[in-house]
Amino acid sequence: MIYDRNIERGKAFLSTLGTFWDQIFEDHLFLSTLLDSGGQNWIDQYRSTLEIVDSISRFDIPLLRQQRWYGIEFLESAKNATPLNLLNYGEGAVYGPQPADTDFSPGQVFDYGVPFSLSTQTNFELPADIKYISGFLDNPSSPTAVMSEGSDFYIDTDNRTVVFLKDPFKVFPVRDIYDAAGNVTDRAISLWAFNVKIDIAALYYQFAFNVGQYVESLEGYKDLTNAIYDCLVLGPSRQVVNALISAMFGVKTCKVDGETVERIYSTAGEPTIIVTDSSVYTFNENATPIVSVGDTLSLFDSMVDVVQFYYNKTDILNHLSALSLGSGHIGVNMDGELLFENVTSPIVNGRFQISGAHEDVEAFWREVRRRERETGTSITDYLGTSTNPLMVAVDTMHGGIYLIRVKGAAVDDIYTVNDITSLLPPDSSFIIINEVSTTDSVTSESLSETLGFYDCDEPVEEDIDPDNTSEHVLVKGVPEC
Image (cartoon, rainbow, N blue to C red; front, side, top):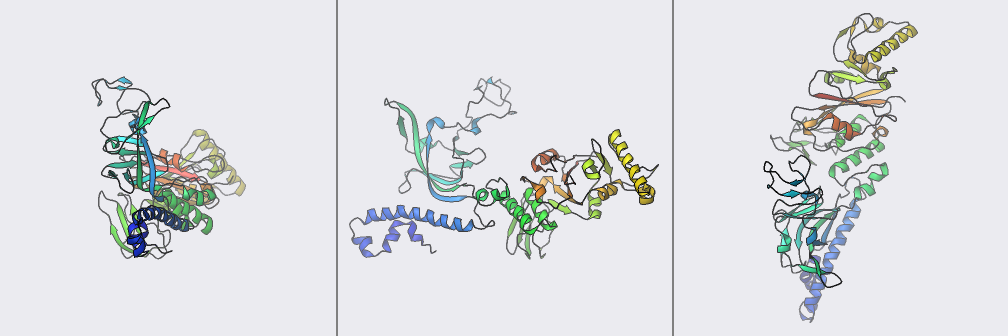
């Protein structure tokens, strides 16, 4: 398909038809205007065709649909009636007149659910599918006023609101709205939004719904959707699972096998940027590169330390201080969990150091004694006079064990997976460690809620802090059912 920019400009397009239509034809000005308006529609159709072609690929599918013009009407009665004009709990306001010791004007009255305005900004609610607008005009062909994004207004997508820095009712022509009796009931401005980006949920309807995953039209969810498909198509190898877990925490991995690192930009307070010969990757400012200039990357390789993946037993013991396990992992009938620490513990009277409720500890050792009688081998015959309780726990767990260390301070977004157990290797357990410093806002509890891992019909998740440190451990497993 060939695209000629003259299609966008009626006068220029008319000149390509010949001198007669451009100069001699009496209604050439009308024809020029007609071609100009038709050209706008042709351009939208051209863009839509390109978007449809790109939508064939889960890698190239556009997140938002671009439309040149979009008609919007704003009513004066709807001015400042948006979530931005509702108070949030904890802001210091009270219902009714405000006392003198608050940040609000003394005597100002706030009622529950009633919008208010504390600034000169004017805001209106937008249709839910609009995510970006370049500008507002009152007439697309010969506007009398223009308001531009950034200098005159901005879009708050979280609250589906457009915020004008100046009241648009004082900028654009206003018309009155009458009722059946001829009385003015409201006022309105009819505007044309230019260069609008609309969310038509293409990513969900084209790909994500096929794997039972609801997603928003965000780049992070696009990466997650691709990672889910990779697990299904390529199989849950270590590299593919690493890409899946990384995508859940909004961290990009290598897109193309054989990429070469060409530049690394890591400045305090600025996003970390890694440039390869085919892509540019942007990470949180707290992310530390684990690659160097000149390195050749493999598909799904990690480039920063935000999400680190360990599956070797030695690496797991080097990065884990303790592990709390329940009956589903160690095959003991008990109500709670037992804590196995990464220490050297002497074996005294056939027991080594474990922590937990008394009943659960005794249930564990009763099972050990039963197995000793069954096999004819004592625990000291098997382990010697001392052992590492954590190593025993890792050896005892059903199936494989994978350790995932997440640098909470470098996580911007967390994306959920509906049924992750169907994507992971069967009969395997995944331990997710969330590194949280005293200044981090991410908590293990929020990660536990958001991840939503499920094991059989019941969730298996632990949050332990054996040394009263800031390290939180989440245990997610897929034991035998």
